[in-house]
Image (tube, rainbow, N blue to C red; front, side, top):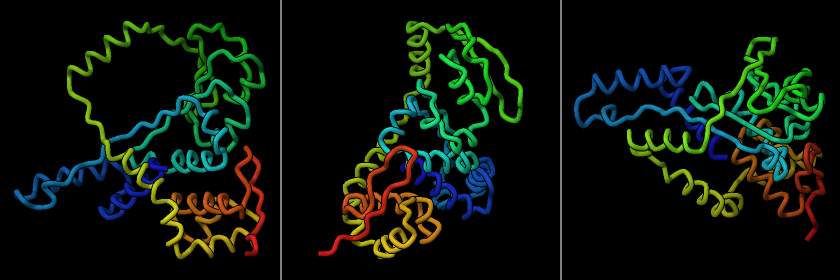
Length: 261
């Protein structure tokens, strides 16, 4: 949720500056800072940092709420690059209910280590071969825009080497943790109920779901012209109120309708 919200915030900043991507935005900010006099707002403005989102085990997320996770990852994969947000996802369970067709279509660069079957190889790379790898860092790499696999080898890095590298990096500069990220997430969760009670479009969203028989975040975004987070909160509230059923893997949610008081 935070990543999608941050992407939308960055797109608003890009739009305000009249630029198409993060590089052009940062150049304009730097140019404005050089031309600004002390005390001007432009002198205090900061550029946007690049963000790399790493999902260590996609299967775990998909088990919790596959449909919502799939929609969020798809939006980020399709749009976040221009805003300086990049994605790396990994899984030890390369099944079609984890690596769905929509997710795969938006990740052109793929790597596969040794897998147990041809089916798993096809799921990851759209072709066989990974089942014959030797393990111990042996891998197949599918570069973006290239239809041919490359066989490469990953170097073994011991825990001691990892510690030496991370210690070196820590000595160069102290990490700058943004504690507000987790605070915003916790605040959103705590105020979610109140937000929905005050959301003037919630009743309209319920009517749309009942009339169409579909409980989809993307559908609510299109019909009501609202953002991802707002649509997701509406769907979750409908689930708590018994209007729609829980997320069940790749299957669509069941729509029950309102209960008569």
